[in-house]
Amino acid sequence: MVNKVFLLGRLGKDPEVRYLDNNRAVANFTIATNEVFIDKSGNKVEQTDWHNIEMWDALARNAEKVLKKGRTVFIEGKIKNETWTDKDGNKRSAVRIRALQFQVVASPNSENPSNTDNRSTPPIDDAPMDLQADDLPF
Image (tube, rainbow, N blue to C red; front, side, top):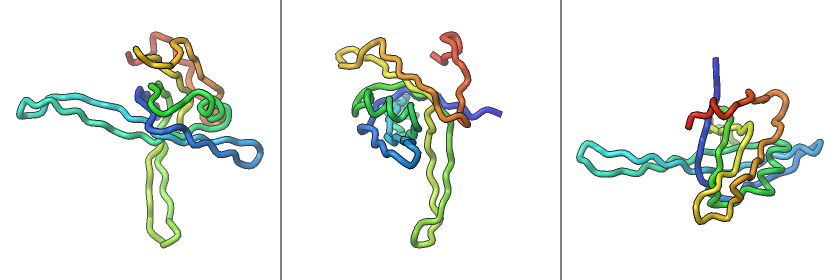
């Protein structure tokens, strides 16, 4: 069984980084991905999906240093479904992508360095598979 996600998108906001007990860090932010298709009437339609991203520890610290709103980023991670009961007793749920590694992607006319490599070691329980260039989906 596999739970693996690859996303290429733009940051909707700067990462929000919090520092917890035992010097743990967590970063949260959103990225947008776009899909363009032709509908039944022949009209070009652009659909944007927003994804909630979560990074931990060294990865979160790296994100805080290099990720900024508008930058394009490639993220490898896994889907995390969360459910909880809020303070009013209502059941709530959310879907997050727990990033296992990321890389800033330079685009023409951007400030992003083209060779920035921000992969980092994730928490032990989320150890990523070692991807080779031939394994990338694009």
